[in-house]
Length: 397
Ligand SMILES: [Zn+2]
Image 1: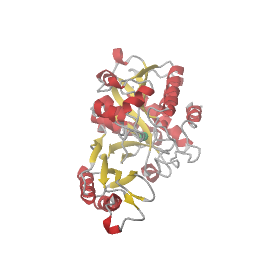
Image 2 (image 1 turned 90 degrees about the vertical axis):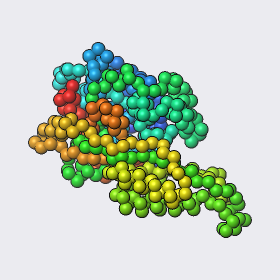
Image 3 (image 1 turned 180 degrees about the horizontal axis):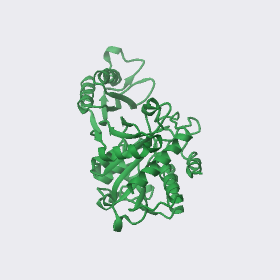
Image 4 (image 1 turned 90 degrees about the horizontal axis):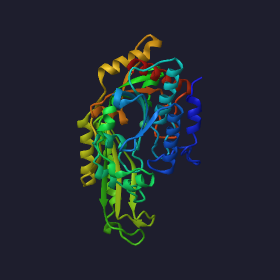
C-alpha cells in the first residue's frame, strides 16, 4: 500500500478555492506556510534533515550531502497558478516521499545522499517571475530585483518573505546548497497530450522550449465614457487589442505560442476611458528565433518596447541520463519509455542551465489540460509514476 494516497488526501484541501475548485497556493502566504509545514512534517516523519536555503527552497536530506555528497535530489514545487490544478507541482513532491517509502520498504540503501526538494515560488503567480526559487538559488535572478518585485497589492517580495519569517537579506546565488546537488530529477504531471498519444503512463523529458514573459505598458488619457467624442479619445485599450491579435497571428506564422492572460487597467472603471493598460505576454516555442520574432511583432503593433520580465533559453536535458532513465522506466514494459519535449518551464530547466545534471519524468494527463482545476492524472498513473521514480532513484543513487 503506497503512502501516496494519504499524503495526497492531506494536501487536497490546502489552498483550494470553494467557488472554482482551483488552487490558490501563492508564494509566502499563509497557504504557502501550511504547505511548508506539511513538507516539514513529512520530512520529520521519515527522519530526514530539513534545510531551508537562502532562497527559501526546502531540502529534506537522507544522509549528509556535505560530507558524502553531492547527492541525488528528487522533488518539485507545491505552489500554484491562480485557480490552478492539484497536480502541477505537488505530484512531484508527494511522489518523491512515496518513492522513498517504497525503496525503504524494499530495504534499498542508496550509495549517496538522497534529498527531496520543494522549490519556492515556482509559478511566479504572485510576483511575476516564474521559478523564482531556483533562479535565486542559481543566481540568474538578481537579489535586488527580486526583493523589489511587487504583488498586485504593492507588497514587495522582501516584505512578503519577512512576514513569512524568511530573511530576504540573504538572497543570492547559494553555492553551499548547489554543491550538495549532484543530480536533480523532477517528476511532473504532463501538461500536454504526448503520453496520451503514445499510450504510456510515464515518459522522460527531452527538452524544454525557450520561453519568456514580457510586460507591455500602454498609456493614454483617462476621460468620461459618455461625454468624450470618439475622435477626441486617447484610448490605450485599442492598441492592446491590436497587439493581442498580432500575437496570435505571429505565433501561428512562427510555429510558436503566445498568450496574454493577465491585464491591469487603470482606473479600471466601466464608464472611464483607460489611462493606462498593462498586459503580460507569455511567448514560447521550439525555436528561439521564432519566439523573438513574435515578441518583436507584438512590440511593433503595440508601439512600445516590452519589458522582459524573464527569459529562459532552450533546455536540452542531458542525453545520457535521459536515455538511461527511459530504459529504467520502460523495463516493465520491455521497451524504453517515450522521450518527449515540453513547452512548460520548470525548476529542472533552471538547474540544468546552471550546469546541474538534470532530468524529468512526466506522468500522463488524460486531457492534457493544466493550469486549471480540470488538470488530472489517474490514480493508477500516479502510482506508476511513483514506481518509475523509485526505479530511477535505485539506478542513480
Ligand atoms: Zn510545475
